[in-house]
Amino acid sequence: MLKVNKLTDPYTQLDQVLNNLHTMITTVEGLQNDLLEALRENTELKIENKLLREKFNNIPEKHQEKTQDGMSGLKEIYQSGYHICNMYYGSHRVENEDCIFCLDIFDHQRGAGKKNNANSK
Image 1 (cartoon, rainbow, N blue to C red):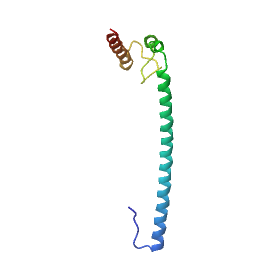
Image 2 (image 1 turned 180 degrees about the vertical axis):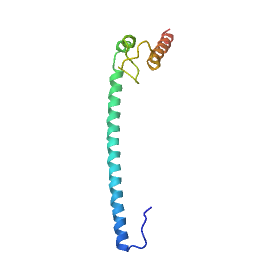
Image 3 (image 1 turned 90 degrees about the vertical axis):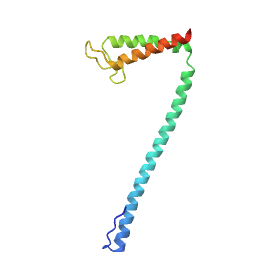
Image 4 (image 1 turned 45 degrees about the horizontal axis):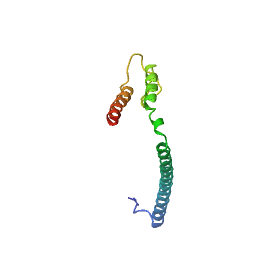
């Protein structure tokens, strides 16, 4: 709400209103530019996402089956003393201490493997 001192003359009041209006216009223009930038980035990401999905869907199944090979690679990295979780990826683990986030990755993969074996029977 605009505060206008009733003791000031109308010209000063009008000048204050105009200054406030200019400030609001500048703010709205800044918001408009931010929104346009966000919309542009969103559109680019949608296109990139679509292209990546198309590439993924065109990967032969034999390449997709290499998940187990990737998991064994992760196990080697973990056993050599590095984190594989997204929280601490690539950083050294404290010697002889397990990371619950890293172990969770192995647990999920084990569960997915059991699920896939049950579906193939």
